[in-house]
Structures are given as structure tokens and as C-alpha cells.
Amino acid sequence: MTVTANLEKQQAVELYSKMLLIRRFEEESERLYRRGMIRGFLHTYIGEEAIAVGAVPLLRDDDYVISHYRDHGHALARGMDPKSAMAELCGKSTGCSGGKGGSMHLFDIEKHFMGGHAIVGGQLPLAVGMALGIKQQGLDSVVMCFFGDGAVNEGEFHEAMNLASLWKLPVIFMLENNLYGMGTGVNRSRAGGANIYGAADPYLIPAVQIDGMDIMAVIETVKEGIQKVREKDHGPVFIECMAYRFHGHSMADPSNYRETEEVKEQMVRDPIDRFRTLCMEANILSQEEISELDEQVDTTVQEAREFAENSPEPNESDLYSHIYASPEVD
Image 1: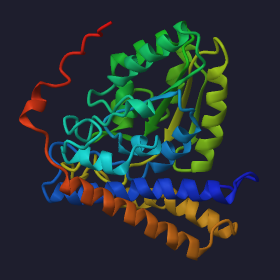
Image 2: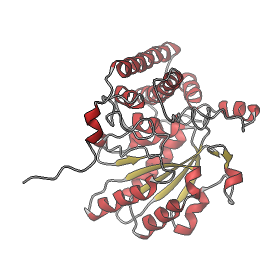
Image 3: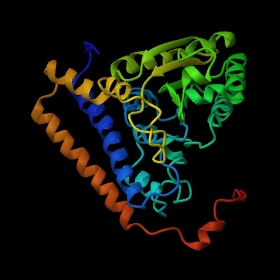
Image 4: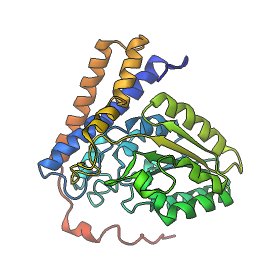
């Protein structure tokens, strides 16, 4: 990881704070899960923070983000209120989805965050559909679609890639390759192995592979990708971000299929530690400033936890809301 000449102090503060917010939010969510406050599945984003924080803030307000079930980091990077996100994880009525979606279905229409999606690969054709609507309206907005290496083996992946290229749609395909689809290594599940970006070649989509745990590399690459996709009739781009999830696939996964040494080797690449060291060695941030930011983030996360704990659960009547669209009345 190298410092670029235009990395200013305020940008460094924002990048570090946002990555740390996601890390501490996820750690707190794991504690709440163990206490029984969060039920169902919980997939944390620990280790992959640089991808969301490096990519999502580069978008405009009129752009769209859509994600998979490991969606907390993307939602927070898009500006979702941590209180609303934590309340949703706990199934509370004050959550972003009214307590009905839970961990895998965070949603914020005002932020153009079009949800986490539990079905593997299910968000890919939705991203293409949104991009088609954007193009038909003559807008220059883009859709950023996050998915994992496991989704590449689904038929929707190939269908989405084909149509996005054929119709030259404004989609940024963000592959988060953490090397495992649930408990299966990518080398065991994909004939082409761990380097997946070549899968874009048959669809004539420009593709690149980067270190997804180097936030500066993410920023540089995604910024260029967004610029290209905004060009009329350029079509999609494909960015493979190589990363690693430090914890199991979900809270139900002991992750005993990975060697201890492998995990230790990957944790040396911790994106937050690397960026912190970079900023301090370049005299962009001091230890005192880092400590102050740490305290601010800890306070934000604790306030989110308290908000979730004290929020009411949905009423029984809410079972019948948001089932059908309300008819428009002239």
C-alpha cells in the first residue's frame, strides 16, 4: 500500500473512521448474536472493509448500490444510520426494513441502497434491470453490484454479464473474492481457479483484478471504472477484489476447514491496520488523532447497540403491511 500525493488529512480521517465503524459494528453484532439478540443468520464483513469504503463513497447520490447477504459494510459505507442498521439486525420496528428483513435484507431507498439479497447471485439480474431502467430514461447514473466468488457459479451471473454487455448497461460488477464459497475453497468449486476476472472476457467486459484489502488500490481502480461506465454506451466493467474474511461464513460456521496458518498469513493484510500504519508513517494522522477517532467510533457503535436494545419489536398488525404495493390515487 502506498500513499498517493492527493491523500489529504480529511480523506484519511473519513476512510479510517468508516472502515473502523464497519469493523466495530460487526464485532458488536457478533456479541449481540451470542446473547440471542440477533437471530437467524449473521454474516459479518470483517476483513473486507476496504472494498466497501474504497468503492461506495465514490458514487453520486443518484447512483445505486445492490449487494449480497454480507451487506452490513456496504450499507454503512453508503451512509445508512448505524442505529437503523443495528435495529434491523435485532428485528426491531425502528430498523431500516421495519424489523422484517434482518441481517441479509438491509434496505434504504433514500440512500439508493437497494438491499442485501439472501439468494446467492439473486442481486445480479436485479442490478441489470435497474441499469436498463437508467439507460431507458437517458440518465447517467450507474449501478454498483457486489457479489461473492460463490455467485460466479450461478446461472444468473452469466445471464447478467451477457445482457449487461449486449445492451451496454451502466453496471460496475464488484466481485469480492474471499476465496471461499461458504466452506468450499474457490479452487475446488470453480474450474478456472481463484482468478475469476477472466470470466468477463467471453462477454467482452473490461476486467481487472486488484488487492481488495488495499483501500488506495480500490479507490484508484473503482474511480476509473465509474468514469468509464458513465460514458454513453460504454457498458459495464468488472472489478475483482481479492480479499479474505477473517471469521467464518456466518456465525454458525466454526471455519475449521481453514488452516490456522492460512488465517494468520491473511490477517497480516488487515486493511485497517495497513491503512493506519500508512497514515502514521506518512505523518497524515498522529497516534493521538487515531485514538480520538477510535473513541468516536466506539461511541457510535455503543449508541447503535443501545438504540437497538431499547427499540420495540414490530406489532402483529405489521404482518400485513408492505405485502402489496399501495395503488396510486389521482
